[in-house]
Image (cartoon, rainbow, N blue to C red; front, side):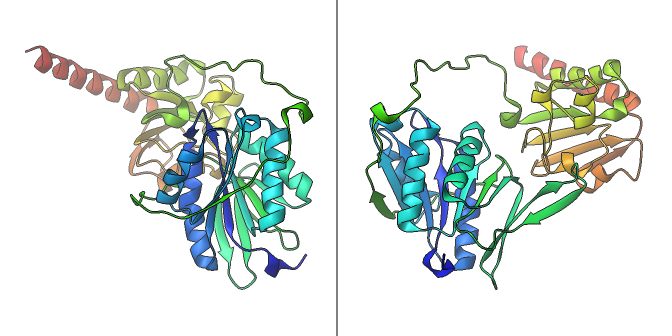
Length: 342
């Protein structure tokens, strides 16, 4: 497999009901940097039904080319059909790099595509770079329980594939009116060929803010000692209208649900404000929150690693500091309400 045959950086564009997943736009932003380093095109791979109108957005967010398959068989995601579409595109147009969002759909599809193409796949990547001398994708992710960062290379097979967690990278500012090339192909599979049928789709209609989408997150770790201590996190979150997060230690201790875990084995977040309370700051956790705009860390250990990742460091006992925060925020809310009614 001569490597010279393979050129270009491709992003699988995940969409549901005609709406592009934010992680796909984030990957276009990072893909643009990788493509520019290699001096190649950046392309989006878009599969679905009645989704051609989305190409405009993809060009504006950095894509030079969009590879499109638009067919009723692709209306709902099924790995059988989507694998056929992506693999056919890859075999015909030969990209050197293919990236997916590490979502439920992206993880499923990336693994089936890599298996069919007999190439490597680095899962849940948190950093990407290019070794220009050898034209190799450097895909890095925490390893050994989050204690080290491992950089994984795919030296022989092409394309080089990786899935990337949402919120790790930032989408570029869209350039209104930017255009590009469109390549349309027919899907090489019929509805009657598929073993799975979509009977119905259940929508999440709860009002609960998803951790990954929250603007404010209050997260707690093992420094809170027990489940009772962890209630401080809930109290502060309630006052701020924030989502509750937790370190892996807190989840494993049973103080929080796995859906609230922030980090490599949990959720990657990028809120405007992140409180890290009693969290030591191991790599396993910090890779999941290091893109937060403002980080307030509270820890009684002055040498805690979390202080290397924070905007504001408070060295002190969480059981003394957090109640004062709660009291002050309650006062501010009360004053704001009085002004509003006055």
